[in-house]
Image 1 (cartoon, rainbow, N blue to C red):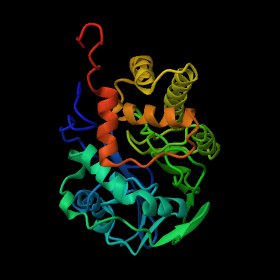
Image 2 (tube, rainbow, N blue to C red):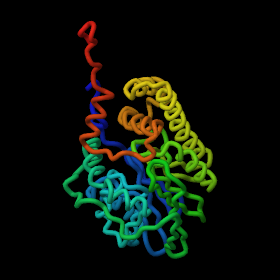
Image 3 (cartoon, rainbow, N blue to C red):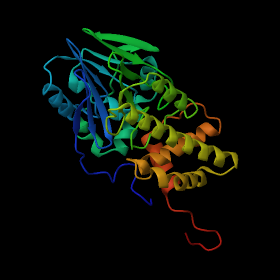
Length: 327
């Protein structure tokens, strides 16, 4: 293969930040690694997304304990991806909460996704042997759920499909703070392997309609002003729109997936090539966009073998020319 598979070349540990957003909300970020949100109520703590293993979750817990000794009662899964959910047992929560759509996706493809993601992200699954298995929600909801952490209102909202069909945001309406999961990224490439390109911009519209003052994206720095929030939404929208437009153009012209992939990378790299995990995401993103553009409404399941086959098909060397025998 012409470049290392997925994130195998990403071996450098990132610097962690633990940013205070309000008296009740904190963001655990690490230079483009997956983020975790923390909400501290009157009587309990809620964690949004968990890190990839229970051992990795311990650093989040350590930082929570620097600011509160209240029990960590709730873990919210913004979606089903392993890198977001497999650390849940480390918090020993009373409840693990997810949308019913996310629960259904875990049933359908959780095992395959776990093997797939562990294969893609060696550094992000540190102490993978500490993972006890799939993370299963103990409470599910459809559309909207409200939690009261004492006097603090926390809304869990399904605003539409995008990154997955089960995406959930965590919204603090009293403080206008939103934890978006991977629906919004900031200077990090959106992963679209399980996406709904046609729906995602409308879901971003629904996020914007809430008018959050602060937003914690799935990856990237916490956005701490309305202007930064707008920049995060605009960047995510721009990447999705440009990628899908390029793929649809290629598919409509009858070009094969490999050609569309090469053309799409060339078109997007000047603007987005320095975003975190660009080279990792693009083969998965273009593959899914090509499927959607050619009539496959729902994402196909990614398995560890499908990952490797796809990577070889898109990133492997060109086959020898039938005329010259050379690459």
